[in-house]
Image (tube, rainbow, N blue to C red; front, side):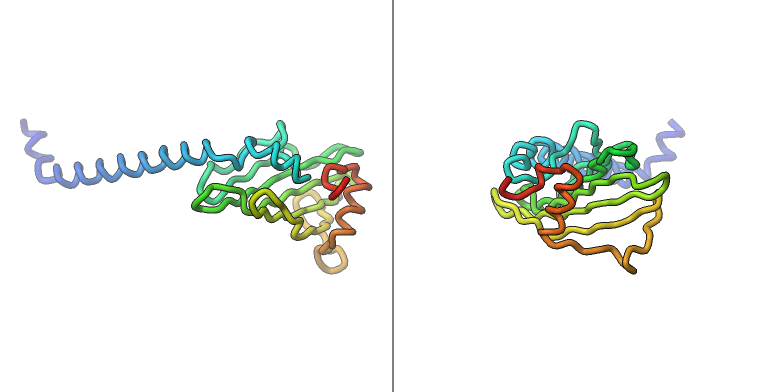
Length: 177
């Protein structure tokens, strides 16, 4: 009885806090279910293939929880072996209202020597069932530190992106092929 009397003044506060926690958890669960049923994750891979945009590959794992803003996928080892090209990450940004893909960014990496890697970073913009390749960057990295490459990252035009895609055997990125 003494314990019940001791907490009696706090009862309304405990009820209000409990209600807020229940509402918040409900919001998270409902929002997560809405996003999981949306088609911007792996479910959008057929669209990506048709539009010649890199897909979310089997070795990629989600590192952000699904949200109204998008998600990101990474590979466990972002430093590929010699002679291999690795699709190291994909960021997906979605429309807040429709959960449809708005933009994507992909990065590919290849090893030059023991510590230097080349990266090709591509940005895509989606409008309905069409896509434009907005930009590309070419970066040299030394493990986790960026190197100075012509005093900055090299911005690529469409022709330069296609040239690197051919050299790296990323033929699925070539427009009209």
